[in-house]
Figure 1 (tube, one colour):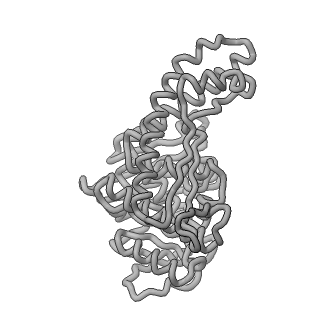
Figure 2: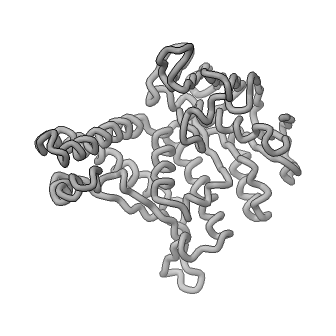
Figure 3: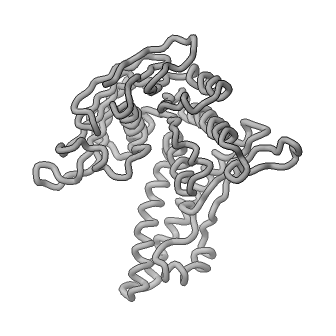
Length: 349
């Protein structure tokens, strides 16, 4: 799998830009603020339908413009595909418009059928938050990995999130006396059914990771959802207006074996040094590459955002091992990565 061409129009700081990528390692060189990370973000959007950093679409649509167009020509095991993402702020020429549109070969698609034509693994400076950050960051990571690799997961996630929003709204309405508790029954059953799919597939992912190493492991902390648990928390849920159990409350942690006593495990968030946490993230990304390839039957594209300045020689060597296995796009603002490998260089700015 690889991306051959990328087109950006009115995306962040780009008015119009066409970038051609080659097989192997592509390096985008430029000073800070010229838009290197924006290129990786665009590729990620075309793969997953989501940004790895924007909270709102408004952030991505260029200033004083109403519509952003992103396009890519990709080659995967099924052949060539032209991918397009169109973003708006919701109003175009004074008329209401969809905020996101996805197209494959000029045919409109839903997000869950759009994803999978291009698969990526992104390694970003902020990825240390996968260990030290909030549970929400880790849940978004799980969802991103599994949605790319598994269409059923993507479908169940979309259905679960829609049902969760509706159920939370009903909890508010029940508290205000606008509807009866019986209105929850349909949505309870939907969340239980779709939640079981999410939990089972997250367990499979965790099991896969834990088969990859004897010294590092992922501990999956899941929040079971059932009729009994929903009934148990119903009174509290009505009071606070949100659903208190289910996969939207899941979390995970990374542990490594204790150096002095290999029978014991250490939580990296609590006891790991910054270097150990970075090694944990590298392990997670390496496993993500292998998991995604195993599920889709081809190697994903690797995106590396200005990370080499943060790495020592040992970690850098591990990253290069990953980069050698697939098409890779690297950004850097100063020195080129130290390597004897052939690099395809592109100057930005």
